[in-house]
Length: 384
Ligand SMILES: Cc1cc2nc3c(=O)[nH]c(=O)nc-3n(C[C@H](O)[C@H](O)[C@H](O)COP(=O)(O)OP(=O)(O)OC[C@H]3O[C@@H](n4cnc5c(N)ncnc54)[C@H](O)[C@@H]3O)c2cc1C
Image: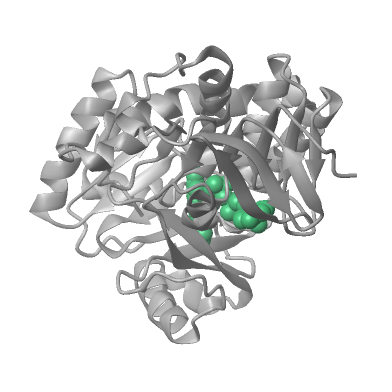
């Protein structure tokens, strides 16, 4: 049943929305209403993502978010009584050019300064870590053993359960169709089932961030971009500790999924849009590149395939926290293909913004929406 008022309304029930609901309720703010328009929580980007978690970024703020978020995932089963299939199999980046070597040397130096002990690998060491991978053209690699994988749907489930037990209301099949603003302040939302009065709205609509922002008169520079995944039938000889392998030049990745491999490759020419049908032409390009890099894949079949949307910001960094206008509107958007892993910490940070006036567990000044009005400084280059 839709209540007629709430202290906080969260728009969207992906990992960002449900984490925010949980962290608000955990802090004692339980008059929280989360509205998800789909039949189930976590069916969009979160449920279609590859589940990768990593510390290996090129940007200090992304590494700092991981330094908080990944330990939160490690504590998840104890805190929320929900297993999330966390595996520290490591991320192995494959590098093919001098420019990539230069960029990754800087990345590794930054990561080590922040306490992330990434290893620099020769081509021979890369081959040892992932024997099924053809290292033709690979000049070096980087590996961090604490990177890995977790199950996105279980994380969503855990937060939904946890937030509900603490008194939050989380509803599916309820679309937010408008946000009421009066005298520069948020005062309510309109939904497919009626109106709700509230002074605080959190826009957690993932690829639809700009649509929801526009309802409150906020211009959120986030574009939806389609990305695809293929999962194969069992791969002979695939070891249990096969890492997440990323051929950086091709934006091509593989990780173990059951007894098979999950692989994705970003189409650099994909235009922005909400189309989530699988592009079979691109799938052929993707699978040709995948077989060239991992020849054993020629011996297996496609078990499953799907497409989902990245929510891409201009600098590939998140857009987090309160906006200058209207008062009461908060963003948790623009995760540009690496947001699942930052869901835990970003939900906590937005809860702090709302309850304490400002996020304090991590300094999010570089992630505020106001940065787009200023000269841009940092960009996250380690995007897949
Ligand atoms: C193919 C693919 C692979 C990825 N791999 C990784 C990875 O390995 N690691 C990683 O960390 N990240 C990965 N990501 C990115 C990650 O999935 C996202 O950053 C993250 O899930 C974003 O969560 P979200 O809650 O913001 O968005 P979503 O999960 O999309 O949730 C937003 C929700 O808002 C709802 N909504 C929208 N508008 C309304 C409205 N008007 N009213 C009510 N509800 C509304 C939607 O239905 C949706 O459920 C990947 C993404 C894709 C597509």
